[in-house]
Amino acid sequence: MKKELNEFLEKILSDEFWILMGQGFLKILAIILLTGVVIRIGRLAIRNIFKVRTRSPLRISERREATLMKLLENILSYVVYFIAFIMILSTLTINVTGILAGAGIAGLAIGFGAQNLVRDVITGFFIIFEDQFSVGDHVRVGQFEGTVEEIGLRTTKIKNWTGELHILPNGSITEVTNFSLHNSIAIVDVSIAYEGDIERAEKIISDLLETLPAKYEDLVNPPELLGVHTLNASEVVLRVVAETLPMRHFGVARMLRKDIKICLDEHGMDVPYPRLVMYSRHEEELNKRKQLGKE
Image 1 (spheres, helix red, strand yellow):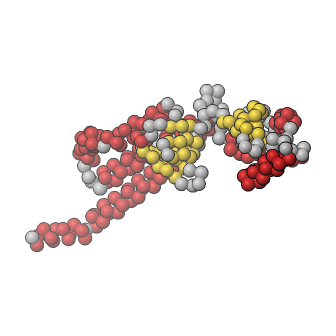
Image 2: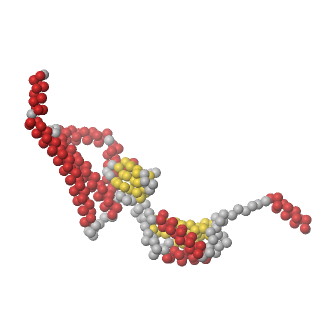
Image 3: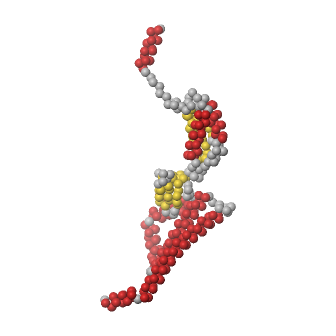
């Protein structure tokens, strides 16, 4: 026992041991630094490749470019980190070959057990391959709605307009509503009093709508006045629709309401007000008696 302890102390106190420790520490430090440099250079190269593609006649959509660029950056990080991990184990004189062989068998066993993880990865691949949605799209997935921040092979990140970030496993995404693929429609209802001149109001609104395409860039086509939409208790409702760029209909609808209101005020068209009619049964009976007495 004392002999083994003495040999251990001699080994630790020897210059060769500390030289090997220093070399190993420097190698690990160099691997970590090299990993960071490779990832940074790789990401820069990926971004430059996509910048060059913007000048090519064979282009894909900007949405898909952003998604693929983010995905390639993630794959690059995973691969480089894995290689760096293996190199660090090798520096520590750990048998890497045995670990890789065991990892293959363990990975097969985990694959059977982690079915949800496999499903997430496969679903993520098909989301990207089929271009169901991309980074920057406004989508609704189940009860979550917002802008896609990131698409990975396992999860998708959706940011709500109020700031919440929803992280969804790709395997849970079964139905998607994408609002960014096609143009949107802004709908504006304009109320006119029954005493107002409906034809005059329609003429005023139509003349205004013809001037709006030059004012708003988000309009695809000139807004259209469809005519009388509903007859309510105290108002006639006219409906205006406008085709806009994707997800621009909310802002356009607000501006249309403002412009139409100002224009109607300038032409003396009053906004209808709620009315309340008072009915007295006692007074009606008195009026009937008076009429009978006169007869």
